[in-house]
Length: 57
Image 1 (spheres, one colour):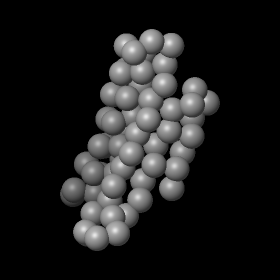
Image 2: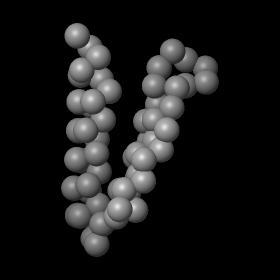
Image 3: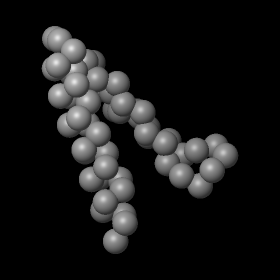
Image 4: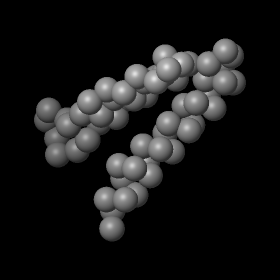
């Protein structure tokens, strides 16, 4: 599954083909490197919370 955001950033989630785990890929865009780093941090936190922390219970 790949989600493309309005700013061109994207998030992809897929099962590993060789291991029992989920792989995530994130690409962040911004007007500057600092902006892109902020977007990357936000998307990373979203993935960690949505896919991993909720399911760890």
